[in-house]
Length: 426
Image 1 (spheres, rainbow, N blue to C red):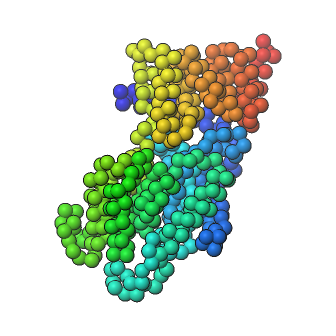
Image 2: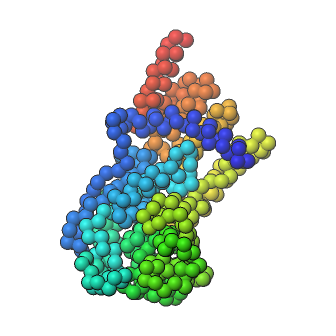
Image 3: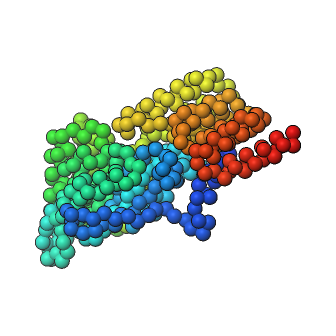
């Protein structure tokens, strides 16, 4: 079965490569590769202007014709993680036909005063050295006020985001993520805390989290915690749990948190943690972010597609449509709003059927996309390709023309010119 799936992916890659080029490549300068844009929000709460880095999926286009709303991921320490997270989500959501996670809008938040904004309480003495702290602290809740009351409303007004939100932070940022979970669980659906600094202020947040996670319900919420290897050389994870040295307080506080959270099976929180033996505090974000994404969206990918291409399958077109519909109703239930079948995914199924000369099935997939995405030029062009493969030049010409009416599509224009020339010759 895995080999058969590989054939499907290869077929999709070959057949859909040209399809993607026709809708995106002509819209960008040939000498630039862009993954985002810089925007800004003035915060009355923080009394300063805050820049934000914004990544939009390619399928969002210019937002004028595409009515799709995308899940949004808020990323602390934005410039430090923006490139890896945007690339990772693109790889897992669209590249090579992947639909492991949904396409997302990513909001990277650069820092102005990191320690001030990421720490929930004010302290004057360094936890590790006992020296006087020379940096600001304790503005974490005010920063969350900024996110809730100013940043999120701006993002929701300006960009095509849905109500499904993920919050990702590392180190002090991970501390902010845990603080958000226990003080404002209504803000996000998913929380990713990577090697969080739970030692802060003599572990005050650690103690608060334990009682809050015990006494409250977190149905529909998910938390992933990545734990780096910050122990002294030669020490094992079992040994560090009973260690009392101040140097191991960072990892001990995280282990205490994850071990305690793991026992709270009746609070509704979907929880997972992982220890990364081969990664330190600085290297762990990349691999932890990848694992977190895989953990958070196990329900998103349509896993029954193999049956569609099994030569011995007796599944009818109606049954295929029903299976797709059922899957996306489940996805909608997780998101909390109606989610249509992914246009690119359905398009790829259609092209694989087309490559196998299964025209009825190909037409069914392309018609489903036309029904769900009537403002997409691509769906009409794909239907036109199907009629062209069936040598129905008149219907193909009609669909390619419709594609141009809906939006700019030089690829369709080339086929219209070709068909008109052929019809003249005939």
